Amino acid sequence: MKSMNEASNRYEIPAEQEVVAISDWLVAQALAGTPISEVVQGLCERAESIGVPLIRVNLATSTLHPMFEAFSVTWDRDAGIREERYPHGQSETEMFLHSPYHLLLTTGRNELRIVIGADGAEHEFGIVRDLKERGGTDYYVATTGYSEKALDRRSHDGMVMSWATDRPGGFSPWQIAVIKRIQSRFAVAVKMATREQTATNVLAAYLGLEPANRVMEGQIRLGDFEAIPAVIWYSDLRQSTDMADRWPIAAFIEALNAYFEATAGAVLAHGGEVLRFVGDAVLAIFPVREQGGAPDAARKAFDAARDSLDRMEALNQERIDRSEEPLAFGLALHEGNVMFGNIGVPDRVEFSVVGPAANEACRLEGLTKELSEPIVASAEFARYLPIGWRSLGRHALRGIGGEMEVFAPNEET
Image (cartoon, rainbow, N blue to C red; front, side):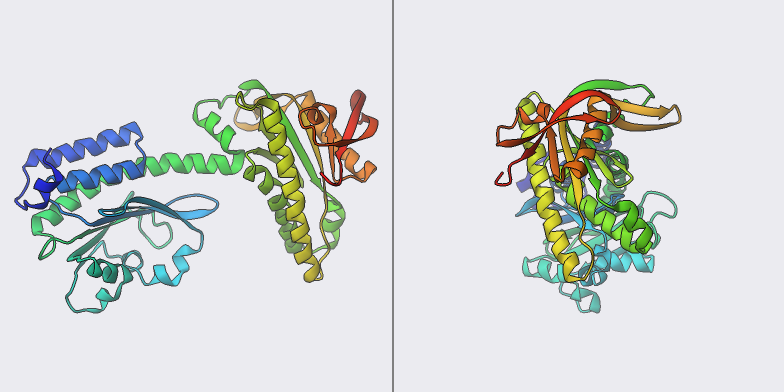
């Protein structure tokens, strides 16, 4: 392969085998599951090595994710590689609505080329102005769909890619031909990567990240279980039945999701796994890892508990300012071995935890109402976190034999 310096000074048409070599390399990367950002960088380097001088290349494609609608990878000759994810609603911003990508996606055009410096309204695009300041001479952007109707206004199931050069006079005809050829091959790698990532995104959204990874690795059959030690989190919204009866459904759903953001959101922020939303309850775990062990898992869970109380306090202040009723929840923290895996029926399984420790955590949370404490913990949990606990005595748990000593954190803690 020729050096970058050689490539920047030669513009003759490359040999067929050089273009084929890039195509073969792209297929190999697709099969190997190489991260898209690495493929973009390698692609740009190889394109330059065969005489296609570049200063900037950008790839953008849609994704199926609960928080993001698209992601992009940008290679810049000076700045290197940059990845970005765009939250839902980004496609309605002024920046996107006045971009070349929006023009292609809404007009049905497959490509757009701007020779920088020429007259015309299309030169008002912000990206073109930026490239002109850098000495850019040509900007070429094209769409590649993943299916026959891939790039319609509703699905945008495909990718958009732009290429920019500072070669005097812009891209030559054969350079544009090479770009079109390798972009179609590159689209195969992007499609494979995004399809796999979409599967992981969807599973993670509905199962949690750790269960999603296990399912993707093949733990999918009914009865696939593993015994693991974990800190167990079980929280429940107070007075939810009464609120559901009295409030308009939209107001109740809004409040329910706000409560989940305060509790499940705190769990995720501190490294836990949310496994189930049981009505208005949150079942989560902090797996005990080899590094740090149970004390580390207990610390993360307790930090998440304090965070959830802070979040709920801020939420309730907003609700009071709007003359809305405040919310409250109870939380139990427990530690023990759980069975982590699939339950259900063969054609409808659910990834969750079962076992005595999980049942004890659920029953333990019920004591928060009786004891008027927002957070209670078992002795099994408290022993790993010497922060100053108040013993609330020994209590029988409904449906569970024997009694458990229950603790609450000191107010100063």
